[in-house]
Length: 295
Image 1: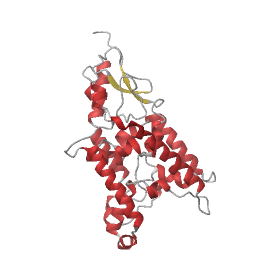
Image 2 (image 1 turned 30 degrees about the horizontal axis):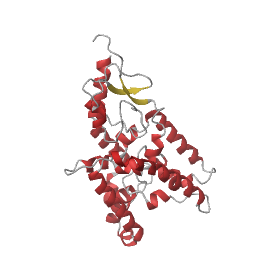
Image 3 (image 1 turned 90 degrees about the horizontal axis):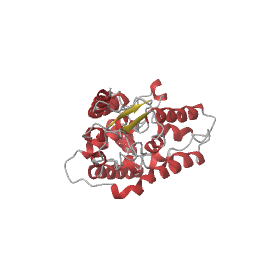
Image 4 (image 1 turned 120 degrees about the vertical axis):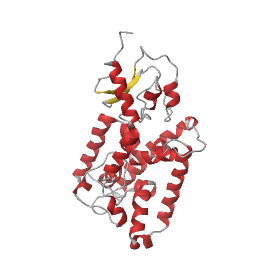
């Protein structure tokens, strides 16, 4: 049983890139729209996707949870408010930041950028910047949309409008290429957001997932559930020899042995693949690595 659990965990970790690609495709299934310059507006757009994925992307299948939350957080008259809040809680309790590691299109985009050959820099000494994403969550996703609303009570999407680079990457750029009217309407805000996107791209090549670590409010929400989520990473203390290879392999700067359920852990499985003793594995609903009594 112990060996089987370890093999399954390593298999999941090894398939991560393929799972990320599949999740991105499913989240953006309407690919022909990329060449038409128009947004899919079917019934599926009333359903939120788990990762950060712009509603305005021509290929987008569903709605971005952060964008949808900002729109309705300012008024309790929208039943959608309760739906999105429940959506966050459900996915957070079930998976935690596994969504960041496996199901988020923008997370995968950063992973691909970091594979570009060149000098890589550590974020270990930049840990205080982790708290910036919580400030962005509170100020730009909750407070400002609550305080600044239109005549029907819908909030202004401050994070999407002024910070999120995903909107430019998936929305503004494809739409402007395929739609001349949108292309001629682009102004200073688009230029400003392009600068943010370029900065994130450059930083993602140098650092591992800077947007996830320092900026993403969706990651901030899911991180609150990491310690209580049904899906966890567990360390079998009877097999661990304290070599530290798991922590060295972790690009999210987590001490895996001490805090395997740290809020920054995205469940990517790098520690599972790095462990020479197969002491680390995924656990779901209490089913975890069992001690091997036959050693």
